[in-house]
Image 1 (cartoon, rainbow, N blue to C red):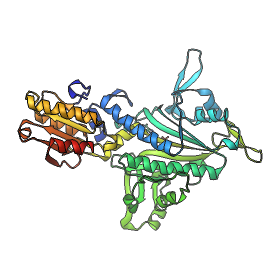
Image 2: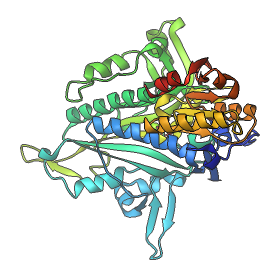
Image 3: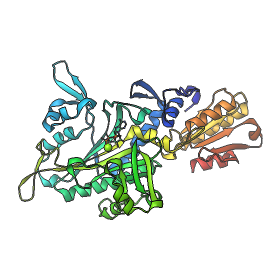
Image 4: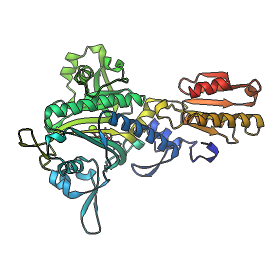
Length: 439
Ligand code: ATP
Ligand code: MG
């Protein structure tokens, strides 16, 4: 992509309304625009990142055996009356009336709708287990939308739902999602810690929030410091195997959100020097809720003994749009964003320092063509601008690599390769630079 033709309305000034760094940087880098309170338009640069995160989330859901569907954003109020949540949900639900006077709503979540799909299609234990997910916009009329996409009113969520015959089956599905979340966040370049979360009236211990530690986070969390040294999960997980040991390993040390925190247990189980009390960003939440919805909505299946029982369910959310902000909170410096390679909008920023010089432009065009041929995503700054402005903007948008082509080095057959993270620069030959970036 040529920057001269790219729609990337960056801002020089720091927008006054933005309280936290990710919000400031997203506005300054021209990634999003606020449409109204807590509602954002995604501009090309931001949209590319959103799509990359979405794709990684999708791949890890698929790998764990979940199947993708797409449910609508607008739902009928009737189902929510059946589950008893229509009134209970309160002011966070955006209620709409259609032209026939029917009550509709903009879905804040999808337990009712997915249970309805299930109950009209599945009758027998033979059709279990199943996991169905979608990646769809949600609306919650938050009292205080803030921090940009971190707490929006309209936001993109991946929500998966599991269906099992009994608790034992549901626990297996839960473990699959637990592991899949570890993998997902590791691939996104994030250290997300599973922390025991409130289970409400359901009880039990099958609720975990995945938390990224950050001072700007809205959750107060408590954990054993050793968890911070755990490695995310690499490749090679067999989802058909028993995942309980993995889950045990990750949950044996104290790690709890505010709701679940118990100072007495914390002090008993965690030595003073290991006690971590921090703020964090909730990027995912997995939850077993048993028959909470299948009972009122009558999602019943026949057991092998031909008894009819309510199906056991769980739900598993990831805040896809919140993650764009969360990644930036976890990875930035004074100059701007530092994208982890997996979610970067482009891998390379190619900077032409002297557009008017024929040899510079020729070399840039050649590099640009070769990188594209090799399938490397490159943003080529071909504008006639001051070098300082180009560097500042490239640092701001945070692409992992910068390839700088200027007349002085080029005379010696060299270009400059800069790593955005860490800022190391190196003068190398054109061939070496290309080999590095395409390797
Ligand atoms: P929170 O405690 O932050 O309000 P929640 O517990 O209500 O979130 P869930 O219902 O568990 O949220 O939703 C699943 C995921 O969706 C959350 O883990 C979070 O990453 C994301 N999410 C929830 N609310 C918002 C929001 N207002 N804006 C952006 N993302 C959100
Ligand atoms: Mg939650």
